[in-house]
Image 1: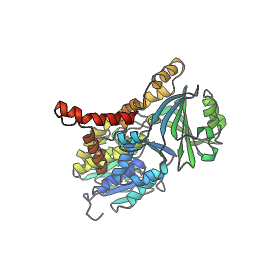
Image 2: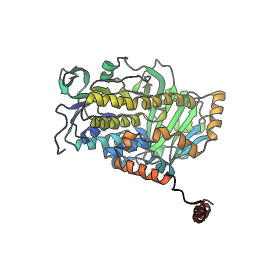
Image 3: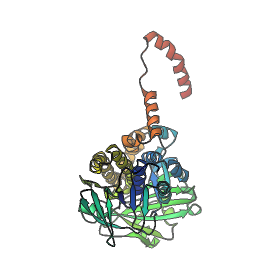
Image 4: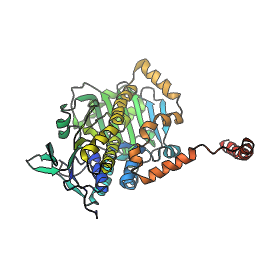
Length: 442
């Protein structure tokens, strides 16, 4: 950046994942010097596929990497929920041109590494961002000028502020919240990525598809220009179980999903090996900030995957934090307090909604039949209305993206009530337009 940084001491971000890099990019674009500390040997992203709602794309656009992310995304046509027992379609939500107009951006699926790569490219283009690997944050102390950040090996960094984007086992959270390691949720995921040619032809759908069955569900969708398919199968098991990216043989996995009908089971028999992940969860907490130190993403509000919003919430966090810091003109304690006040209820709502949605997915017996009856009666418009709270970008994201703000203003003008004319004149002038509109509808 050509101008001098607004802060002599850097803002240190613990964690170089999607949320940490987005936060670094947002702060640096507003003139703040940032140091990102990643504990791994290189910047990268574990996992495979991820779903992105329009609210995430608004953040990417505001950060200037929307084009890069969209280049690598697959723009599916529907969100589907199938009954895994009967094989019937229960929910079909079109994510078509009308959806994109309503929410200002598309819904897509993408490989996590492609998102991470776009953000990393954006950070590397700004000299105000320092990227360090093999740098694990172990703690911090407050001082009169900011924060002294402790690293493994004894090094300390004098920082203006500290953002803990260091995930589920956050060392920054340990100091602020002090609630120990996150407990196992009992929700075990088995993941696999399949070459498109191995995907059963009957399931090569342009959709993010979920097969809901008692105590289990199976999700699949295309990736990387339809060259791959992502498969994630979840079962609710004993909460004492562990597992983190460990191999699991089909002999372990298939019996757990045996209540599903033939078509999803054909898919489940395709991988020769799965990767096992035990999901972890924390309930919402009322505070994740301590002066010029705060948390972001999973470090602040880890959630189960049922809303497909974990990364989206981290991205919104990043933009909100950057905007609040800019508006507070570098008063990090005030900025972080404002950031938390804006994010607390929204992220907690997603956390709790994901739990409730998981219960619906895993319904059994009469509850399963009731679920199907309720959702079969809904229209696409009703689904879009129900999703408005989550897919509409918050104000601090919209205002950070001038293009989105102009689209919103234009939409508001289109839907604003017309100025009233005298009744007789209005009737004669409207009649031809109404006839044309009626003809188009027919």
